[in-house]
Image 1 (cartoon, rainbow, N blue to C red):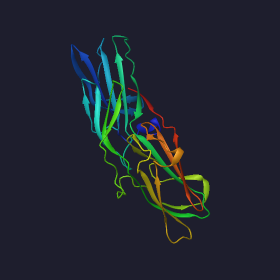
Image 2: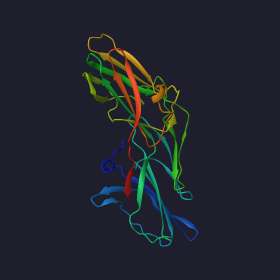
Image 3: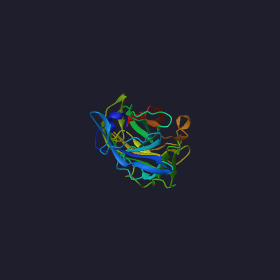
Image 4: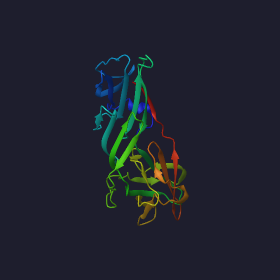
Length: 275
């Protein structure tokens, strides 16, 4: 997931840009899925465009570039079908306008990229009296991960989820990464996902059946302890919903006789880009 703007610079994904201007009563598309990429001089594109004096210019941007979407010229809005998984990319969006009739400003247009999803960060701490030799069969179920996302210059960003959830038998959509030999150290957190976090559409979670499954085996024990953490039923610490643009840090602490779970919201910055 994207935590720093510098991550947008590498990898070749780029930003997808749409832009329109109204001229003589007609809407003209100036940018049609133009690819913005970062160079030593900043964000650039290959096909030169020119400002149209005295007109309002409208822009919509989306990252990563290879995201399939449709653009409406009339509304200056973008719509896309989107599915998230443990291997899925972050999804960022932005809108901007520049009205040259009000201000003849031909400088680069600053936009703010927002996270369209919520981020879930899962980690485990070994505070027990024995080495945790293995954490395995990690997967998240019951979560809604499919829907249509729409945003535009009207200022609205909306998800329409399709209502389906990741099945309780699905171990791959949000499958985690096995861990071995967790030493006894209350100050060390071990991530359950190699990417550090997973992203999901915003959704209500309080009292839902969303759960994180994992199996923990300690040194000297012949069998693993199965643990199902009901994320919507953690008591007072549980959020009512996962909100777009917020990161939720779930920490599982393994003690001698139990596993204690808690959650908190941690900073997840938005990103400024000059076009």
